[in-house]
Length: 116
Image (cartoon, rainbow, N blue to C red; front, side, top):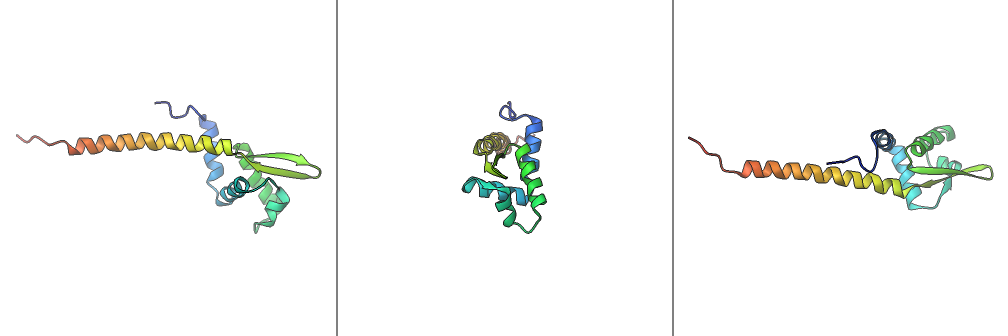
C-alpha cells in the first residue's frame, strides 16, 4: 500500500512539525475560518512578540499551510485549505490501514483454538 502518494516524507515532516505547536494550530484555524489577515493583526491576538508570531507564520508557510504576500507595507497571510485536505486524506488512509489491521487481529482472535 502506498501511503505517502499525496505527500513526500520531508513534506510530511514539515507539515506535522508545524502542526505540533498549539499557537501554529490556532493561527491556521483562525486563517481558515476567517479572511486573510496581516501578521500585525495576528500578533495582536497572542501574548508574544511580533517577531515570534512572524516565526510561527514562517514555519507554517514552509509547511505549505499558509501563504504570504505583500500588500503595501504589510504581509497578508491566508490559510491553504488544499494542504489541510491533503493531510486529512493521508490521515484517513493511515486510519484505514490501521483499522484493517485491527480487524485482522479481531478475526484471528475470534477463530476457535484447537487443543489436542
